[in-house]
Image (tube, rainbow, N blue to C red; front, side, top):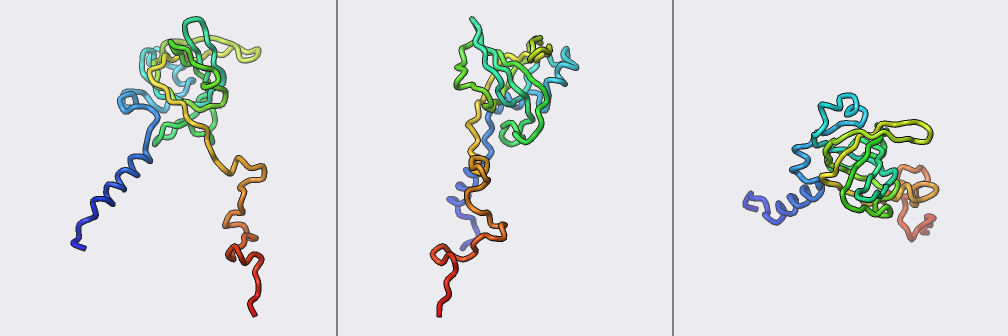
Length: 185
């Protein structure tokens, strides 16, 4: 009541703010990396971006383990500015490959998992998607964050949200034990 804020309340607020803004990639790599790039924009001006660190992410399509390295093919999506997680509701902007010097388990780095990569642009690789040739941007991994699966309850149920939302006109506005409403005479 003396006009000063409670220190415990301030500490709690600071911890909530810091915890809510956790990014998947370290601060050093985020600050030095080029952001908001797509594989198409890198390919258009490849000599400018070659050897540069970029921050990019998306959905894993395929993981291939070769003799001395692992290549992960990723369908690029724009990243969230606050967390660095790929945005699932945005359209895809091309594909890229990430090269790892170590073995990456294809089950852990499986299809449709989300990934954010800070990687150095090292080259291009021409491969086929079906019958068509495609030019991939090749990144050498500097740091990777594999995101946990999304747990949106709404998508997990076959007919939408398991409980009727508050905006539903038939939502029971009366308390639980009185459903349906009883008259008290």
